[in-house]
Structures are given as C-alpha cells and as structure tokens.
Figure: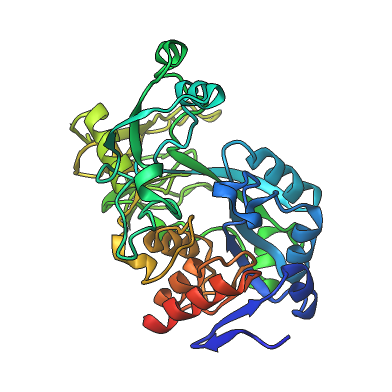
Length: 396
C-alpha cells in the first residue's frame, strides 16, 4: 500500500489497519503507542462506536518484535474491554498507567433539563458557559479548545433556568462525574527467552527508566546489600568481600505509573502542601558469622534529593501549549505532545527504535517521534484526520 505521507522517517498510511498491517514486515516494530477508540460514541463520532477487538491486536502483535512494549489509552468505562481484548490476543498485561488532567469538563446530562425536555417545557436562558474553563472557542468560532466541536455554541453553552417544579427539584443532579484521568494499558509481546537474550537478539527489552527519571539529581552512596565480614581492620582475605563501597550518581526519581498535566499538578500541590525531601538512610546491619569473626555493620545507602515542593514533584508533569493542536485541527481527543514524547522515550530502545501508532488520529504520536528524531509509522482510517496529521508534521 502506498503511504499517504512519507518524509523524515515518518510514514503515515490512510486506511483500515486490518488491511494495512498484513502488508508490513513481521517483527519489524520496536514498540507501539496509540490512542484507539474508547467505544463511548464520543460526541456522536462514528469512529468511536466500539473498542477494537482481538483481531486488531493480533495483527499489531505480528509486526512487533518479541518483547515489544505497547501503551494504549483507554476510557474509564471501557478500558476493561480494551485490556481483555489485548490480553486475549496474546499480549502480556504489565501495568496500567494513569494520566491525570485538570482540563476536562463534565459531559453529563442534567436531570432537571431532561425532565423539562420530556414535558415540552421551555427554559429561560439566564447566562452562558462560554469563557469558563473548557468552554473557550478557538479561532474558527465553533471548535472547543478542549473537547471537539460545538456546532451551536450559543445553545450548547447556554445556562438555563428550570421551567417546571419537578425540574427545580432535580436541578443539580446529573448522571456522570467530571473526567479527570485516563487509563493507559501497558502490554508486552511475549519474550523470546529471557530479557537478556531478548535484548541481545532483538534489541528490545524493558523500559528506558534512566531516560525518564523525575526531578533530581540525588546521590546513592553505598550499594552493598550482601553479607560483609572482616578478620581485622582493612582485611578482606575471605570469600565474599567485594572491597570498598561505591557511589553512584542518579539523575532523579524512578518514574511512576502516574502522569499529570499542569492543572492536575497544581491541584495536587494545593492539597499536599509544601514539603522538603529529607535524608533517608537504609541501614544494613551486620550479623554473627558461623566462624569466630563478628561482622562489622555495613554502611547504609544515603539518598538525598535535596528538593522541596508539592507532591506533584514525584510524578511526570506534561507541560502542553494550547497552540500545539495546529490550525484547523478539529480532532476531539488530541493528546499533549510533551506527554507523548515522554511515553515514547519511556518505551524507546538504546538505538531509538521504530514506533507504530495503528490509530494515528491527528498524528500526535508521529509528531512526538519527529521531535525526538525517532522513526515512526502510523495508520489512520479517516482521510480528514490524515490530512490534519500531514499538515501538522509539515509545520514542524
């Protein structure tokens, strides 16, 4: 199949991935990062009619190398179906990441409005939601900056008063909570032997923890967790003595399975307050050996981040700009580029690796890969979104 877009090691196919994937080479992809349909019928869009089933994930697995990792975004109501389909296709479920954001707006139905509508009662307009967070219009006059199209902003953002007594009684009741997080399923194609063998044979193994550490730096001094004993000051003439303790410098905290956006980070810090990281010493106590020698206590591991602030400093925070969607991008679920860059870095191999996005949308994964200088391949069914993705890629 001829690519829709091919430039700077970025390839985009326009078509059904069930038809495109069989044309790709087997075991050629190093990792997968994608935002598939959630099966929620999001804002009436046809492409979100269902969660991709087992055949999709089987076809994706065929083109992946053994040990390849995959991150797939899901919806809070349907991620269980997504996870089950991925697992039933032969992938191993390794974890579930959480992306927390503070920019979501409620999409629930107001019970009072539903009652008035059912009774045919006309409600008086007493205000508008325009200008509130989540209800600002972009330059085209109808696209919401956060979630999709507002076809009739005046009507859809109108604040109305209840018209009937029953509606007044039920005002303030709704059928859903405000969305504030999305699950990201982490799965792995089964290994070819051990992790070490897989790394040597296929160039794929585990996650790039060192490249995704949070904050820092901190110093780890020590390192001995084995039994140490001595037969006199400075002597090490018995098996098991590994010499002096070493010091290793690490550049930040181990990445967690939670990521935040700036607003979520701010809300978390407001709740946690400001704290300072203290020196923590992990003590390793000596013990008596079977011989006459008594073991000298081993110095502990000293960890000191030397930082202070709110609880958000323990997690990755994606700082996304409002302009990164690109002009004319009306895709309703665009992910922040900084978040996608972080996830691609986490999954990357020592040589970078080829990333596949089988549900490319408006191209955020491909843009993140281009910004990182990584080769990437995407597949998108909707030609309109392919056009947007190509335009965004050319704008970089």
